[in-house]
Length: 211
Image (tube, rainbow, N blue to C red):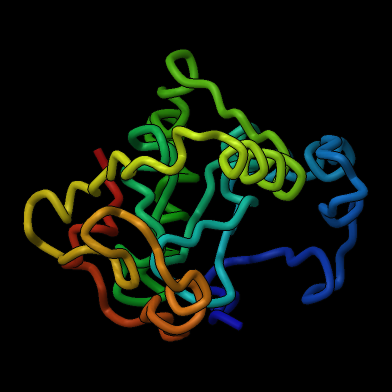
């Protein structure tokens, strides 16, 4: 588990790891139905901690995208490229802070400043969040790709801003054509996963803006 900043700010934890419950876990059987009960509860909070159980390259929990559809600010802690995946100034990245205490201090400042808080929702008139389903849609997309002759052609590789700038090399496990010959190796072994809250405030991949 990550060190939730409970020592410095009040945090309610739902699900198996906490004492509070709501709705049902997302699964194949849920068929992507919105968790209305949970959504109503979530929107009663100012922030939603969309933390990963490990900081892994390329991985972002579906809970982050769900939070973007609600009137709450997601606070993320993970190894995904949030800058390319989310609208500008739509979330707060915990890894932009050197410690849980500093993160908690920032959250309190934002919560006490209506203008600063509302700026995190300025993107909403210009973007929509398409959730699909975390399981069913992925399976359908994979099946369609496998039956599409065009999928046999070399892929059009999308490089992250950091790759294009030469800050980092090609993503671990990916070859020069953009393919992942060993999916298990890429997802489980070569991701460089870690569990510690290291000081990453100078990492250009993890930033927040306070203006």
